[in-house]
Image (cartoon, rainbow, N blue to C red):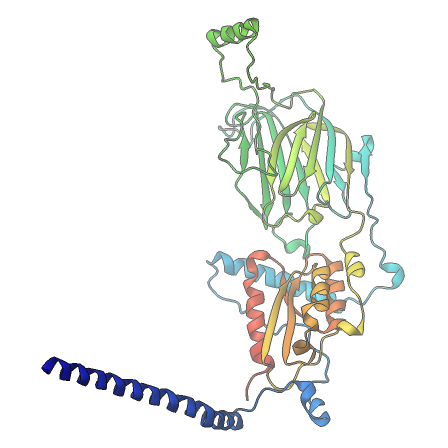
Length: 468
């Protein structure tokens, strides 16, 4: 009897809870239907929606800036007393060089049409005999991927030197026979640049190295600082070391300090007599010898330079910072070597300074819209290199044609630093003045200093639309 009463009470309480829950759900939907629209209308009245410039009346659309856009950034590089910071010194030097380039660019009048002729870009350069007395070969338009340089020469006999930098005992008389082959770029900014950049320094040391063995040393010099040298001493690079386009950095050759035992020689002859097949690695001598001709070929690959001598790969050198192929405009061969001929092929067929004319489409369709007086909804700063004309033109024709950008609700600008080549800077200035979407940051472009462009983006956004 008591159990039946208890069950009826529990059932009744469950029904009441269910009814109460259903009532809350009904009240919730009632509020959504009746009250939330009132709340949205109240919020809309206090926060009107963003209207695009083309949605404003005609008299309001005219409130855009009619003056020509300023193409030079207002970013100021303040000089510090302390110069212990390496990054600061590099930035300061780039800023000084860039300021000089910009001053020269704005002061020098535009050349006449007959004065703008640029050096021709031959696909092949060939010199021999007396044409090589200057010690260098000019490559007017630099190199490109697939370009190859062939040098035919003969190392001279070793001679005595008492002040050599490659000997272990300076001041002692040492027999030395070495020569250097370098790919260089021309100086920028006059004589104030610390040193000529050496994109590739190839130094075979037949005799005179501090190790007492014939070696090949490779390096580069960027902004007056030599990098970490790569020494090939006769041992093949280990498999764990990074390759360059699949090629090892150093091939092996027969070394005088490696002695083959009589037992190993006997085993080799026994294998031959028994007809046993075995993977035999060819053993080559050091690729250079005194008073003997050589044919050296340098090929520009995707990841670096590949050097072969007499048809055999010897070394590979990966590209490093500042190693743009188009900057390799000078080939120097000097030292204890007689060069008989130089042949360079597969060169670029157009000058880097002429390239912009092929990529830029000077049409008013791609010009930037005037800046709005008020702050836009978004501001986009695009970091770009000075010679990336084709890339900027592709951006103008693609997402910069979005209706938000064309209506000035969103503003996009390229932030570009100056190039070391005056011809590229001239084309860059013309591009900035015509399209109106480029802000030039006056420093000599360097990938390590890209933070200066980021600062210029922040400065542009704050100063252009500063709130009074």
